[in-house]
Image 1 (cartoon, rainbow, N blue to C red):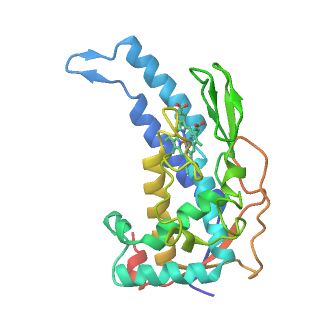
Image 2 (cartoon, rainbow, N blue to C red):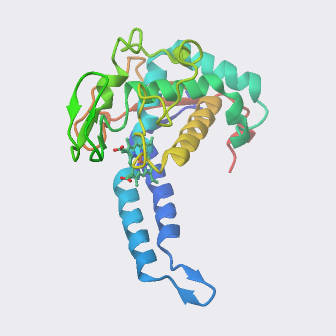
Length: 260
Ligand code: HEM
């Protein structure tokens, strides 16, 4: 296996951490408008945004990519379908580009299905209700109540999702094709909903799609022992995989595409 190379989830996390650091650096550098540097309220806003981004954004994408890879490696028919789609739309003579993403509908379905089964944050918070209300389920919520919503449970509710524990990206090309992750469909809320939903959603989706597309297009992926990946989750602010993911990558394109 001369051409193969092994990566672990820690290298993916390091890469993502680097991207977040660059992002944070650009947020924190002195802001000037012509001659004056930034005012105190702007500085406060930047500090708050930076801290929130570090806390909320630093490992989320790495966690999401790791789970998506685990699911793909454990479901080789999905890997094959994703690679067929990449070969049809991109071919094997060039690299994936950001403008290709709109054509990769199966890959987009994989990302949605992966965020459904393994939302990075299983619990989201909704801010205090402004006025008394009664939910469709009959629960009375007095004004001022803070709600914690268990989206992990909603994402696996069999009344909403047939065979809820199965990894079936195809559901987003059929019965659930109009369901997206942007907070308007309450059965799928990996980024939350409303005014306090995730501000990093657009960035995350772009990075998730592009990273997965580039990886699946460039490499055959398998576990070193060909055993299924252990899917145990750890407990924490984000639901990281309990054990590191180790995969074997084998180049599937001409060697010139791996230069630089
Ligand atoms: C796959 C990646 C990500 C997922 C699944 C995710 C998910 C979430 C969720 C569920 C919330 C809470 C929403 C709520 O409680 O209603 C949140 C909040 C937040 N996220 Fe993300 N996130 C991701 C990536 C990022 C990134 C990359 C950044 C920044 C660069 C980021 C910045 C934030 C911030 C600042 C908040 C707090 C917003 C507020 O309280 O107003 N997230 N995210």
